[in-house]
Length: 359
Image (cartoon, rainbow, N blue to C red; front, side, top):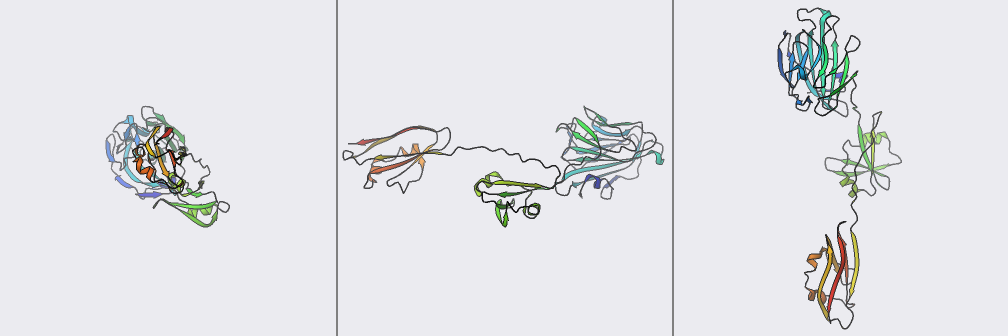
């Protein structure tokens, strides 16, 4: 696999390409060539094969002109065909498939005026780039189109040799074309994180941790800070909200047209806690006969005899099964039982907790 910094660098030569058809004439026949990819869909078909015609068209995934790219499609002749896969981009990278068709615009002539060479690059962001390396000066009356159910035509010439096709749907059935090589952004996007004290933190996706960067605050941060300490992987919100107080997401890019950060937050209401107590200090109270409660949903409860040391929270349904004689026997000298009743979600409802005494 090859690695290039841009599409322009990729199509500058064929040094790394595989010479599939080497100086062998093909006129009206079609040669099947494995693409080496499974990530590009064109006209509803994954482009696992290329169907290379001697008449200057290549079927993308299907051996049919109805699903192909055509460059001066007429009675031409193919002599050489090359393919190449790899990634393109310095920081943000994209997978590519590149192929080069090389031959002549007239089937029975190898004159320099008929020389026709063109590159096609499929990028995994859904774009197709056409780079015409050699446009003939004769026999240029063929069809020029990216053919699907919605054919997209273009007009090449000696002066117009580069085109960018952009799909309108994920299935690749509809396309638009623009002149030139309109390459995607290969810019870096790096993240750092702050807290309410303006400290700066680095995120490691390897061990899913945040680490404070000594000597740097939000007041002193600059581009070099991001380059030295930033991460291209964004930290998950589940980590930020636990590790940082009032977390702040800081984003830096060397792109000339930065995009906004879009996030979706879901608010969870804080659990409601109702506190109350039962005073059993009256001399007529000899014990507890029963405990009942009217409630709905996820309710839990804990209790204390001194309002300092508390039992663990248990579900209300479990607490109502408690041995009331044991509960009464645990009373301290002030003979009070303190309760914390917790509503654990927004749908929970609590009406009352009723203690019936033995007199």
